[in-house]
Image 1 (cartoon, rainbow, N blue to C red):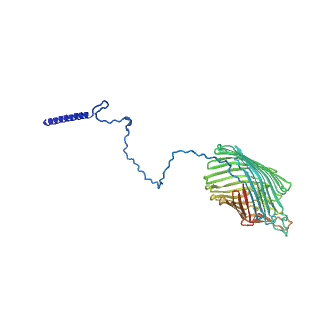
Image 2: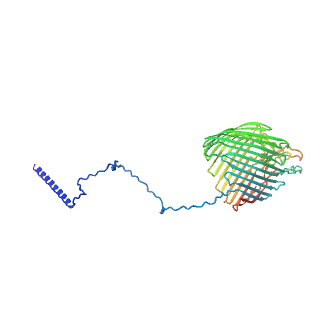
Length: 571
């Protein structure tokens, strides 16, 4: 009890002392700072209050999510000042130069001369100043005289051409003349010191021709539009004697595309007459009509074509044939490796002009007939390796009726006759391989080549006369500089065979012959051109550089090493 009284007294005394000290402090502050009408002193406990708009209502995330970034090293970055120009300056207006059409002229005149009395003259001109019109002309003369008696050649070409591009289609055409002159200079073996070719008569072929075509233009805004073409070909062709051939041909195609599907047809009509067949007054009407309807499915990596080839031969004789037409092209590696194959057939018109272009020493009494390809099954591979390498290899098996060949005439062996093999079911079997390659080693070097290997199984003839079993052609171009260009060509023909008759005397027509070998040959040619100025150039070309004595046809040797040089002027 006594202890509690003491505690109560101590507490009361403490409270009284505190109240007295607060009153003294308030009195001292009032004296030091007099109260004014525009100020107030409020004494109360401090309580911080935040408005609702600035309160943080999200609890802090206490998880440790610190990311440790790798130390980056930017190398030795140059310390370069960045200049910023904020001021604007007036643009300087450049005057437009006088407009001038670019110089794309390809006109030139060429003149050259060489051994074997070689004379060359050539000219070409074209107007190419307009985008939708192009026209011009050309002319050429080449003549040579070999070391053998009457071994002469001359060739002429002259013509005019034109092209006009309209909004929907393009029209172009050529009218020209080709001439070729030579002599029957072949020298077979003499009999009893009597020449079998005493006169060595001249031969001359004249070809006047016209070609015109109307073709639809591609519309990039409508890839499914109908595409079409109409073409007309006509020529009259004759030799120095009584032979003459006239032909008028019309051809064309229609194709309609719808997405990956194509449907169309190729059509042609060739009306052909030949005078001088077997006898000088005889005439032959050998005309052919052809229609080839097809459907084609074309996808991103494949192309399939199905159709038929319907051919009618009419004139002095008539025949009607229908051949299958099918082809597939499939990309195993698009752009690099394709496989293809198909089956086809058709009729190849026998033409006096085509035969004499192959062999200008055809005799006066010749027999013309068509060649029928009863069946042609083929397949192969093709592709590219970028833009520098392209290839194609094809194998085929053909059955041919009426295979045309050249054989020496028994009475005048310096003339050639046409013989045919294969008839009906007994057709000539032809197996072959074709290969092509193109290589672009660089912008300076381009190479190309073609190989043909053929094997014939004959029916009546002993051999495929004058048809080599192997042919190889190669070419190369070297762009040494902007002024110097070099071209090279190589040609190889394997052995072929010919009929060589055995003569008992100069008056008896032989019936026996032996199989003579026309030896294989390799012909290498090269040429170079140097542009001395923009307009003036110098050229040189050498043929048969190995000076090989060879013949394409029996008794008719080719020229030996010959060289030609000259100048050309471009304008």
